[in-house]
Length: 350
Image (cartoon, rainbow, N blue to C red; front, side):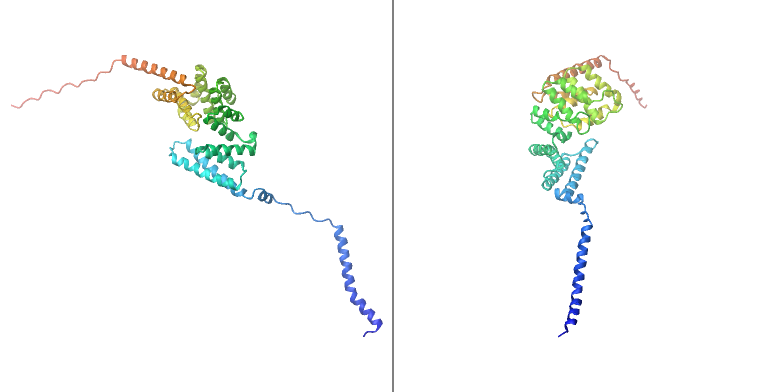
């Protein structure tokens, strides 16, 4: 057993490390109070994107693939290549299936809904197309849905015979002849004219066209200008229709017919019988009267069409022109053939 004085010294040496540790800990706590805590690391955008849309990257890639397929289809329509129906439908079938899968990954993606609506419409799936397009408009609001979505929705209602509903959606398309809006404006003008508001339909196209005669006609400008001439013709404003067509022919020269033909190919008419009217007018302007008469006859025979009387007027005018041309050619004496002199008789040998 240690002596009392040595026991106290031993106790002090044993307790000193503990006292030192407590002092250092207290000093560290005080220092920690004086130093402000470090700011938290910022959360990356990828983190929130993955939280809000975990399949966003995959859906974006699917949308890009679908848009490439649609562009391939649209470019082929403007070329001289003839596609089989099966080949065209294969593009839309693949696009439809891609967007069906993309919608499962991202049900509220507006781009997916817009492309799905177009693909379904091209495949004749009208109910699915209407549902997808309406869903797209709910996500974006009508003001931000875009001319292509609003125009396609209006065109579907036109084909269904719901003219008032079609005009309501087509009227939301902003004016201006752009690639995504020109067909909607033509549909709107034709729908207004078919409902008896021909002047309103003409004004729709006039407000969209440039005030001065352009030096170059884009595909959109070709379609809008020819549609205006067609409405003038339907309203029996022959001088106004001739003026529009004459400006187009003066600018385009020999390319007038082929370029207008390419523009009409891109248009999906509603009702479909309108294509005969447009095609007949183009044939007649380019003096292909036999083809024009056939197209006028197809339009007139399609049923109770609103402009059937005008089509019959064109048929009578073409018949008069062809009869006059035939009578003129009959009065011109035919060129007689120059007869060769008969060969001399063969002499007999003695």
